[in-house]
Length: 297
Image 1 (cartoon, rainbow, N blue to C red):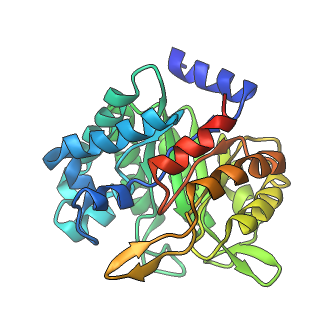
Image 2 (cartoon, rainbow, N blue to C red):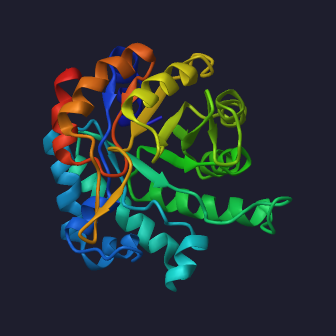
């Protein structure tokens, strides 16, 4: 284990860590068109990607997330870039590493591959595992300290990604799901309960588990969800990264209603409920992270 990773574990044992906020919506503010391949910007617009990372570092983030959410060959194929997996993910990790220096840790970001595994769908687990492993390998070679597997709905896919990251050499793996409210319960889009979802990734060696996104969840929902997650973590650290409310279209633009002040006020509640790594997802900005930062030192 390298010195940065040792320090990450030691710091996490001592105090909560502050993540960063949304990458995609920030890049759209800088000109990325909705639906365009943001990972290509790691090569074509590196200064704008650096700008996002720098803004979050200045806001107080302990963790910077690479601009590689859709970086599997499966997703990149939709943009004609499936042969550029190593190039784009390596570049994304290098950009975040350059900005983080010794002031923050870099999380190599892996999102869903965009399909359905057998028997629900047609995709073979071995094929998907290879795609995740290729992405994780490039992220680690580019300088990622840890791998963040996020916005998962299918526990089988999440577990496959954890195994692939470990096979690629990752020594610290975070796995988070997106949940929705189902009556009085919270479940993934596949209908999986909180306990079953976390058990699937803990069984294959995830170091940190949790939740992110949740477009229809309020901050109050996230506090309640955090308590449920904490009860199922089996003593592992818990990451929670809410959206800044549900997205709304206003004058042709996507808007989010949860303010920086509301995010900041929720931090102590999330921490009390059991979260030890807290950041933001869609719609959250450097202003949200800066407001939250007062609770992390």
